[in-house]
Length: 325
Image 1 (tube, rainbow, N blue to C red):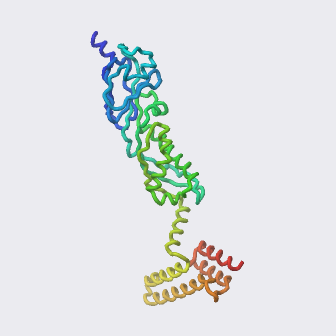
Image 2 (image 1 turned 90 degrees about the vertical axis):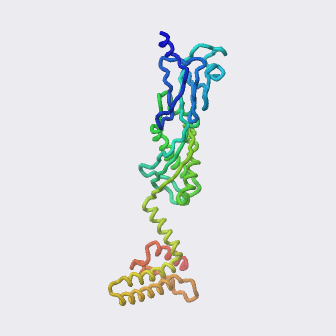
Image 3 (image 1 turned 30 degrees about the vertical axis):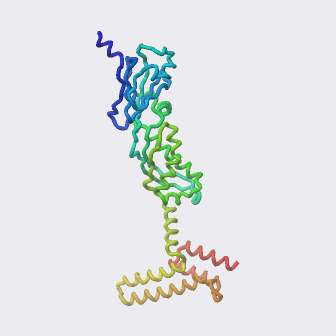
């Protein structure tokens, strides 16, 4: 009979965190009551929360706590206990893990649309990792875990991933810095997004510890535009581009099986092309410049032969037409 009665009262309350990834754990209290003066052990990576009839009461930080009216002020007030109560009491005890939840993955299963200040709406894919920890057990209990026996990090993944993608899309809709400029520096990009995500995580009682963008995939048409822009910056201007094309033709001729004849033809073609383009691109640069319409006709011929791209021709055409009007 004595053993049976003894089992109805709890003298030691603790959680050993035997499973990884558990964020919240409810101490088993079925048909049991907590003895006055019981020992509560809260380890360094934990926080304990007492809940009375669904109402959040006392919070205990790491340490060894003896449960009395002095250590349970809110619970004592809720139950209108005398200061020296001696009887056992009923309450739910929840443990929360405050360890860093590392190597959490995020990504865009399908492209998301963001509104960029320079290019307008663009669709992109991105992925990376982040880490977080539970910071406010009261908020987490009320908004996320509730009265469940346990709540794991795996169950929270979908909610956090949705928060990340929504925040990313909203942030770029109002950002003053263009996406391409920011994405060019992934360290700065990661830090900027981390700052934007602090508030959504805090709303769930969490603290975002780290956030990394590991890869970004841009739409093919935007990537092509950026590649062309980079190529033109490397070339410098159209005159240098013509010289580059002429030099490139020498290499092509040198690899021709016809040998020396091919080299001679390539040199002639390269020189002719260089002279033609140099004269065309210097139009308007001297007093003896030829008529812009003649230059435009020559440029059109080069475009037809594939020497100039449509974009290069259009840019020079616009420049020459300004001189005519």
